Image (cartoon, rainbow, N blue to C red; front, side):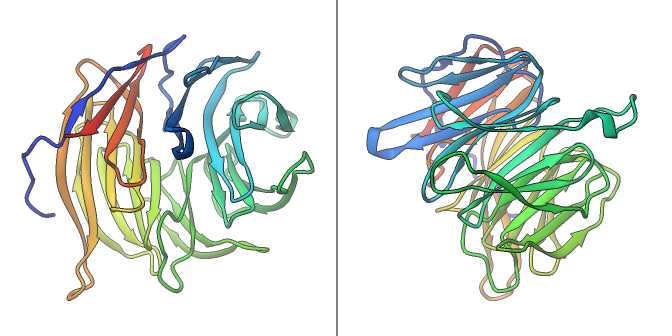
Length: 329
């Protein structure tokens, strides 16, 4: 790990009020940037409601507990995907129209075992992948328009509840795959997506939950309950770097695809900005600490960059009724 840069890189901007506070859920913040309109949408989950904030956004309310809300950006459309203990819902990007509902079969599981969906990612330009408490990953085939959404495949490698799913944000090297899935045990799987999804590597657990995962230029960045960030080579599954990044459970990671900046947020109230790179001479994966921000007395549960360069980011926390924003000085 390279030496830290102590220069202050980001400053706090005006916060965005929420109608209700954010729940303590992994990756509980999603950002949809609309460059042509100079506008960004933000969404967080609070129990049975979705906080969707924009210039004109109103919240959505439901009758069951939600686990995650995320925008999935495909070449032909953008969908807002919600997961809960009852099923998977897909909406037009502004939340105005529901285009698909997939109910979870609660009768198949023992009464003491929770059933839910969690972990959302767009993949390969036409698919949306959603994780399940059983460890399954459902692959939905999304048409360019309309409601004819179908389950095209079910991925069955995990044995524990899925925590997060991430698609490649950069340019993967040959054989590296373009999707990674993580579960409660800490197991990671890398996949090559397409008409059929192919398992490339299964990275074994080491006794700690992987709560958040990202994939960039063939590098898997994984955040864990012990506060560690681990970097794996997607093509081989080999551990290339590890950092004791936080004092408590990591709840969110994000990557800026154009620069390789990595953002991490945790229960310890800190957000850290890192820079990932590959040494061209040694081919080592390097991580450099760039910036720290303490959100006082806040159990951070969601943190995201607001632009592909990583020049600004947003943060929310448990029982916090606003989203904090920071931009580069």
